[in-house]
Length: 332
Image 1: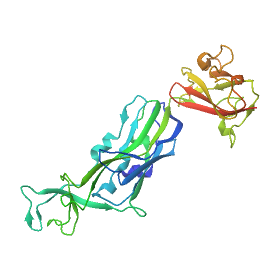
Image 2 (image 1 turned 135 degrees about the vertical axis):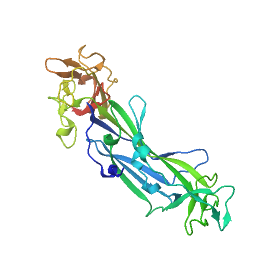
Image 3 (image 1 turned 180 degrees about the vertical axis):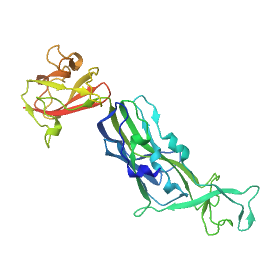
């Protein structure tokens, strides 16, 4: 469906909301059988927007290639594969059913020599030029208009695109002398030689769909969005920092059934004498877990900065829906 190229808007279904997005984690690659070379087409995906979740898929040739006609008009956007938080795979199966491949024709004679015992099944050939002015195309995919992502948690997505290539050096694969197609190049779809089968695999992206709406850490913490160059606030080393936040559903209802734990990572400065394992003050936050204050409808953690050291630290609240919320602080 060419609507995918236009990047139509959509809303996330149910109680899911877009949360932290992790950067590209894998470079372009290909699934190859033994003895195969790198595919002559590369695929790249990247995020265009997070709300709604929109992915851009780009394809381009890395060298000239002969393939079956219709490849350049394929609905490549259908070839996204999403790995779910529980390890399953989500594809756009319904659209795959209406996808039309190139029609198979028949070559009955070549240079007036009848092809026996049966005619050759063929399709029109298509030559895709290589760089610098090679074949390229782009699709803007409004993900949840076409893919049913209903679980909360972390997803991985990449594109996997089948590609058949043929070589003119093998007369059984590419035919230029069929009497029924004068002056036309066709490929023998049943040929056993002179062809290669590839799966062009793009880089992978990771993202999290959250059940919760997180509106930032509460005072006295300043969120990273409050300044141009985080950390936005400094604290005295050895002080106690109260970390607080509220959660709600996408309908605005307070969420009081979540769990959250705190972790830290140092971005600059000398490391502490001992690794910071227990981060809370006293016994108020066992297991570095945020406690719920039902009266205030908020989650809280009393961070003991004395187990850290001078410098810049990232504080991360890991929520039970798989999402992570973070803020940077400076200790002086």
